[in-house]
Image: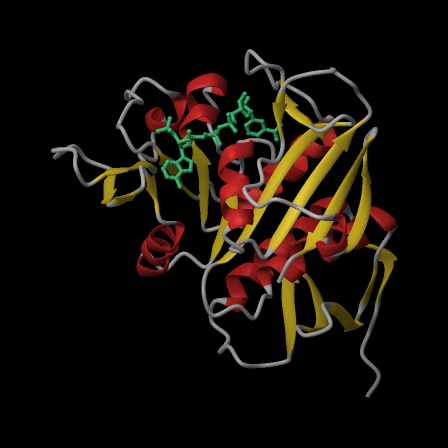
Length: 290
Ligand SMILES: NC(=O)c1ccc[n+]([C@@H]2O[C@H](COP(=O)([O-])OP(=O)(O)OC[C@H]3O[C@@H](n4cnc5c(N)ncnc54)[C@H](OP(=O)(O)O)[C@@H]3O)[C@@H](O)[C@H]2O)c1
């Protein structure tokens, strides 16, 4: 029998509810499937579709999508419905046209548009954990919650090897008490919400960090900056996806998006597989690094 189709395009609100429900449902589906089907009830209407995990596309659906909602599915479903056995790691940076994520003094609010800010909150909403470097907290004092969109605020972890950040920063003050730090295991500390890892040449080995995330059963990890932290995951080939939002502004000098360790020769450079999306005045580049 032919399935009944939801004729009008679904709203942004419904598309987002659908994405959150898919995330919830996917936890209960066994891995190792190439295709998954969903039938999800939202405010009295049933939305069903099949998703091809390998080719990252919706195959059949009983509803129509306008461009904006179609972008939502293209952006968020490949992250949620990933087939990675280790934590799936996505990083996001908003940069100027000339490649900076902040001024030299560390000002970055806000390089990108409101639409991109909403996208960042959506990435938070579909993630199991948000991870940032210590400088992002000391300079921006972010909350790292999903206050602009419906959805849960995940656990937040700050890489703070010398335990320099005090409890006054917003990220540790939220009433969910879900802000944590990773500090060096050389430091004697019995405070709450602390993980300790060894330092290797003065830095955490990022494999130790991802092992910790695996032990915590965190499947989708969102690295929200800054440049040094995102670059260290990129250098270690640990990123599955990078979202780079490019804003049409030029600041001349500032803090770089990427700090790459290797000496690069033009002949050795590989192109990334890329999609792009308009967000307000910005362009979001979606780089698949898997
Ligand atoms: N535009 C954007 O999208 C965006 C997003 C986020 C932040 N920002 C801006 O970016 C700036 C901060 O970025 P940033 O690149 O300077 O610094 P960052 O990445 O926020 O923090 C770097 C620091 O994190 C710690 N860290 C990172 N990886 C580590 C590892 N493997 N082991 C141990 N510690 C590690 C180290 O702290 P210590 O060495 O100090 O212990 C390191 O110096 C701020 O100005 C902020 O406003 C912009």
